[in-house]
Amino acid sequence: MITFIQRVIGFFTALITVISGFLGIDTVPCKKKVDDFRVTTYIRGDAIMYWGDRVYAEDFDIITDAIIFECATFNNKGEVEYDENKMETVLAQVREAIGDRDVHVTLNLIGPGCIIDSDVWEEQMESQSDEHNKAFESGILEDNIIAVLEKYDFDGVHFDYEYPVSRKAWHYYNKFLVSLDKKLGDKYTLGVAGNDWNIKFTNAAVEAIDTFEVMTYDFLDADGRHSTYEGTVELIEKLGLRGMPAEKVNVGIPFYSRPTDMATYWYAYNSCYEGIDENGWYHCDETGKDFWFNMPEDVAKKTDYCINNGFGGVMIWHYNCDLPSTHEDSLLRAIGETKGKYY
Image (tube, rainbow, N blue to C red; front, top):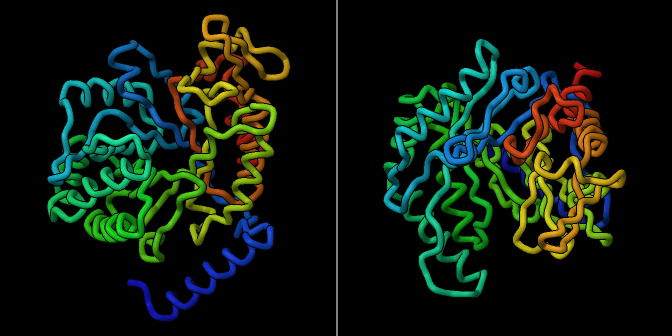
């Protein structure tokens, strides 16, 4: 329970963060290395089921946390929906690869989408939020989530609710996170993902959240380079985490790239790496577009920054974009080698 004193401290912490951000002061709140640095990755269920992607055992010598994605959703009634065959097939492959390693496995849940016919982004997000709010207020979503976690022996649940834009949407989301955390207790963890520009968690929600995956990608610099090291550091330090403790934060690293015009293409590193030049650029003859990739040296620099600035870990979007960690050009391997210098 949040005491009055904790609320006062939280208020002044948030106030200092806002003022510091306005003045351009580095507000990353912690420089002490965490005891156990997390390497968290999303694993796409569709990639395993429909494209035949493999999950490699050796990768889990590096990966500490796996988020199972595209295997479950929830609707506006608070019901959790999934295909049993898909869930069991994906989990079987992941757990076979993990073996007896101590890897934290959580279930990602995607909520209902927009139900209106509109080209206006704000209207789409408001519609999506209304559908989420219905689920959050259903009174049954928490218990339905726990039932699935128990059935499939997950270690926790994870939400990718990227765009609760309005104050109303954030009110319902924060309230739900606190309610869910109380029911999860100490048995299950609660993780959430969000954009650097859209973090409006209450103090109580911050307390409830165990890990926050900050999505520091899908942005370009003036040269069209995607999610550079310099840009990531600038975003994090400008952000100041808005009251989220650094040790709870996993900083996102893309194992994919977007074109220089940010068109709707997402190219995986493992499908392009042989054609990437010494400066990180890949030209696609089919589309005529250019893509800049995070290379092993970029991934290593980001990992080193996160370790030395007290972050809880890094987050990979997504596992299925990489080469096996035994490959000399693997991005995951670069993370593992960098972490190995400290742990």
